[in-house]
Image (cartoon, rainbow, N blue to C red; front, top):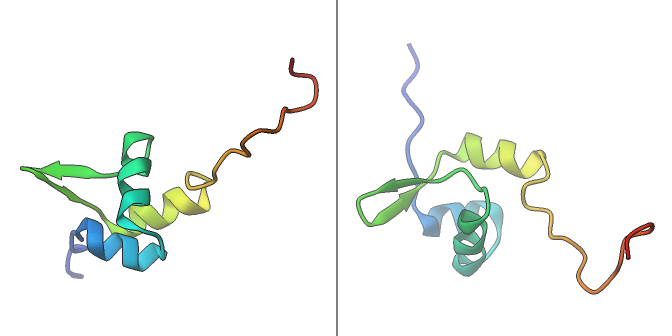
Length: 70
């Protein structure tokens, strides 16, 4: 039987993904998979990796209009 995946902190997930803690907090306000434990945010690396692979971390292009949109 394998051990359950450990929960990681904001600092650890930001290091894992190579982004700032501010970016992580901004993503949490969106739809990044995160779990509140008391006052702390906790993450599963596999959930975060799946979210990134699914395009969750993609930033919309700012200042450009998409074709067909007014």
